[in-house]
Image (spheres, rainbow, N blue to C red):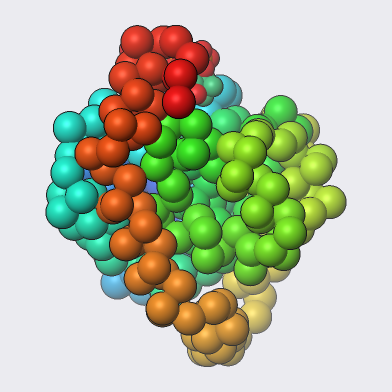
Length: 256
Ligand code: COA
């Protein structure tokens, strides 16, 4: 069952999902988001899967963000629908999954890519990985939970700095801030993810499920997520948005 934009495998009770859109740095378009949802639903139901590991193909990117070319002409209503659907089928879906999901960050995790990693329960980064939420450089803001999950992980002061500058940070800095749980050399990334999965699998599945539910309840309020969707969608159609997206697609620096 390895077709389309994801590659999956079940091995030793681990459900592997590899995003397979390397030429576009594994950017998340709508079909890919729907496909990831299908894969997650299958693994959720599959009794032999105890832990899920999500990674990207190639050594350059985990996921370089939402697919910018896809939403370039969206208006605020379409943007709101995009964010609500993405959160429902992928980002919140992962966060609320009853089986632990580990992100093995094999390169750039930017924008929606970092939001995807943050929706996972645990994150291991390869030494060369770079992480950031560069949306403000494109005339938007994070729309897949980034404004809520980043401060929950690294504190509001650090999150404000990352979101308002749009700067990327390296894996060591991410570890120091608490954005990732572990950093390993690139060639050890999958091995480290397997080791962590095996440690989780030794524990009681019911306790893992209940702990995830309880920990999620500590994560801000749904009001914060609603405000993010509102502010995200309000960026669409503005002159800043048009300039930011055009600059990316034309491979030049934006002039805001
Ligand atoms: N959406 C759509 N396409 C993307 C993308 C994204 N988020 N990120 C990368 N790509 C595409 C590029 O357009 C390029 O396609 P092309 O070969 O058809 O021109 C291809 O992936 C390779 O990317 P490129 O920019 O040429 O690689 P690079 O090594 O010069 O730069 C990055 C790598 C990650 C720094 C750069 O791709 C980037 O800034 N991506 C966007 C990150 C971002 O802003 N994400 C948030 C989105 S909301």
